[in-house]
View 1 (cartoon, rainbow, N blue to C red):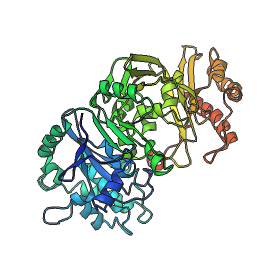
View 2: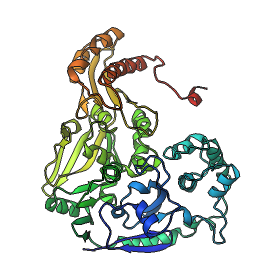
View 3: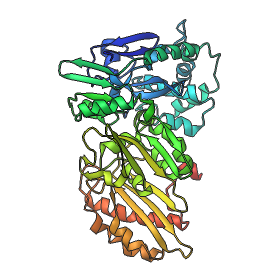
View 4: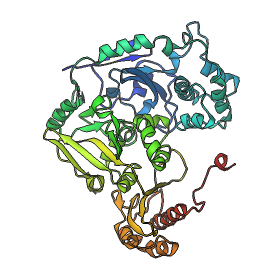
Length: 487
């Protein structure tokens, strides 16, 4: 057993024995290390002013991702390389090409958000040699600017893709082999436990160790990406202890594809799951692209979104419609169930003391038509008001042989519209059938009014989404497109 968190900050080895379970990387950088290029804007992972890169060994390779330091807990950083904007300059103080491009293209005005944009663009620069406009916009989804109108920043990203000097210039490319060796050395060791008064954090050495920890600490808060738990701390000021960190566990990081579907480990981020999902289930891939910004998708996990049990979580409704199966694990072994059975009531899931989500199996929608629709106040990086998902199977006569409809934001849990489904099964797939079935939503859902939407709006939206799904299945141009997609 160890009693310290070890990681690399820019070029320096860091070892900490006195950190709290909810101490954020942002506070550590600014208050303890005086690295003030990393800014605090929203403190909830929305604005991107706190963006840094975190590198981790994945399948023996060093991969860097942009993350929000404001909601990234220090306990999740063991055996990682944290890179801040201060690390980018050349040995002689010369600006990095990413920084110089922002200067040349007038991509900064007040400058508060600029370090975050630099780090997001740097992450893109490291992974994409010639990114297109869509890739640039996707990389910048999680960065907000109130001055420039974004166009100069996009132009800077386009310019820097043409300015790729020798890898020896770049601080990360120049030291990649060295960093890999240092991170390998840090991974050795057992479970980490750090106690500071009543505050405790635990970093299990393996999934088996995680099961042992949770058998002893059934009320512990398990943290993978912290994209939700982070806000419990920064916005609700909740005190959490003990906190168990699992984002480093390689056994929970697998994505396994088969002929029938894909199995996603509970620790797999949205970013890592995207390729496998988008290739086989394009509609679900498009939905993932609207979950938070790039930093949130790099941190957040599908397993965590499920385990959290929120009625407005983006993952559960489409996965329920697809017929996903959940695997739970504890010291007693594994337990499988249909995902829809996991959600019992608001804030309550079918998880026994000591159990944790291990993986999710998502079947491919073979010979069926699938769609997922997310309704929000703004298109990207916003929390769901209503999310509907539909899986339809028709016979040769265009009669409904099976349909699964699931919604988020309409009840205390993600929920099937079983009355609507019963109204449709065995009926011809026609507009008149859809019109007749719309009234059945009133038996399935009695939504609430909150600041995101009224109950009346939610109910009408759910009915309209069913009609939209019908129109799209018969070829009507029902889906709204962005201007550049239709121009």
